[in-house]
Image (cartoon, rainbow, N blue to C red; front, side, top):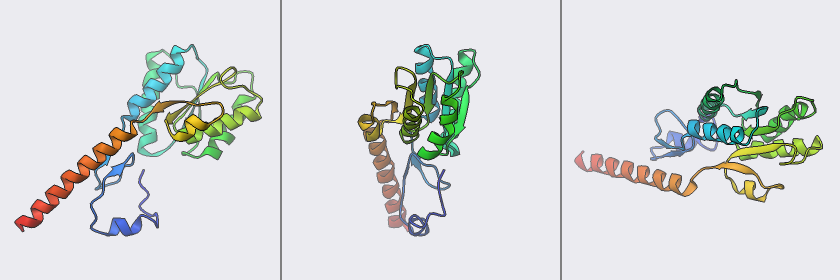
Length: 189
């Protein structure tokens, strides 16, 4: 889930800076993240609780996508269902749009779509408009993150909220502890 080849990150990775990753995983780096497995599960539980049985899922890749997929699979299996239609969008809005659009034109189209990010959910909303479907009357759409775009989208987006302030405070706490440890090591040496 961590792009070691990113030109923007290379100087940081090659330096001796102390870093804590937020909602990312990388070998050798401490990270702070939400329980993505639980988040995926509560999203599907919510949609199933609203009576939806024909669900599509727009997935992301990497460890975070795998964790969210594990959660949705658990929710489906607990309800006696198999995971529904899937679109592998790799966290990309355009892929979400292009992948879900053909499903929306069928007679057995999903009644709800859960996208692993709000950004991908915007792609689903765009595809729904293109297919002539009204959200939420014809199709329920749910995202993940509670990004500001969820509030400003038309229509507003139902989303799994990430506690951004708590995540940030936790990351700062981990970073402060690491700095303290490194400082103590330096003072001892």
